[in-house]
Image (tube, rainbow over all chains, first blue to last red; front, side, top):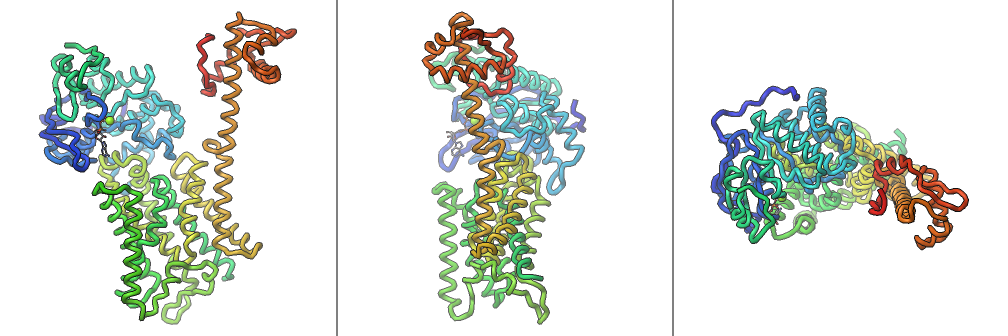
Length: 254
Length: 372
Ligand SMILES: Nc1ncnc2c1ncn2[C@@H]1O[C@H](COP(=O)(O)OP(=O)(O)O)[C@@H](O)[C@H]1O
Ligand SMILES: [Mg+2]
């Protein structure tokens, strides 16, 4: 277990609430009037074709990108006031794997937020980071430069970093992309454990065949919001086809 | 203090801040920003001259620092319009600002004595004959003061904001999410680079600054796997270049800055050749090993297809290989305990521990469907 003092989130507020969100790169709109609410303690898949704006949605939620209209509230407040409750796993393709840093160092970065400006990480941070690596089965690779890890191991390191953030809401961008079967199972087990501890996970996902197995709720996106809700209700052939435009190999529930 | 020593210390005082900041520039893929800033700060130096009425080293540094940050802000703003890409926006901003500086000089400063040649393009050989004298008191070589301040600033920034610089270089999105504003960090870094570049230009001239900003960090990148190590190795390589370059110049009677740059380049070449992870030699060795492993797997696959054993001659024919090539592969396969040859007959050995070890190390390139 990770021995941190529990960061309490304000009760009663939704972990994530998106209202009329519109986002654009310059004049090209990518997200159009998207609204939904995520209840606490749920595993939520964000599903949609390439270029649907899934990554953009996470960027706006995290304040990396400013929305053109609408807003995203995290635990009922703007992201800047809620960042200590949010953990983040980036899309693998967006990471500079040749950066001179090792697994332990990457995990420690998850703790920089609580340290604040100027304070340096010390032994305590190191220990927490090692525990988080242990949790994803990566402690023996702590001092390995990150490009020398396999795809699955790299993904685990970034999950460990999110764990180190000890968040209430986790935002993950395609954590299952390019990982082997064992890592996929390990990630799923981890997501379920987070859920049991009352955490909320919003996870961009690209594999339609596992949506019903992995997630409680789904956000179907294609620029606009196609549907949002419990997997059984909204992950239907009709909705998936609406999101992907045309027929898809569908292995959903409803 | 001897002239030799003044020049060597001056070189080191350029090498150290350049190595520290250059490491971050190289990792941010902004290596040429140093060159751009060295031009863009010209109007800052001229304006500082107008305001203070003289051009002391500190006035020039202050003016340069302000304009360096302004340059970074303008580059960012121009890119944010979405009309030009980053490299073009760097080019546009630094030429425009440099032109403004030239304009200011030719319009207003032609009557005053503003020795720009000296401000922008110093010569390290003059360091010993350029003392700082305040109120008639001799305070030592001028470069020690300007570059000393620059070194303290650069080292101070890197030490104080090490984790902020690291995370905003490696993962700006995480830095933003954590509340460690990568934009602020970026402008602080640009300010420090501006001050460094101008302080160093004044003392040692153009080539040396850009070389020290890029070459030692690029070499260190090849031989290290942690940011702190990369910085330390870059500092070390820069220092060695300064010291060895001075003696090289003295021995061959050539320009000092040129010799220091040549040594830095030589060290980079060594790193590129010998680096265990990225070096050309290591690369060639890896390619060679994986070619051998692939050849062994081809032999094993063919042997399996032939029922586990075959005469050497038949095997060579089946593979379409020269006998010599096959013999070499068989020798290495036999060393790995994969095959045995008796009386011209090659046989697969059951114990495949050698192949297993090879695969676990990830050296094997082929997954041959014919065997296993
Ligand atoms: N930095 C950017 N600048 C301009 N356009 C972008 C940028 N990032 C993404 N886009 C565009 O926005 C759209 C949505 O991208 P993204 O959110 O990454 O989609 P997804 O993650 O769903 O595949 C795509 O059409 C993409 O080309
Ligand atoms: Mg994406």
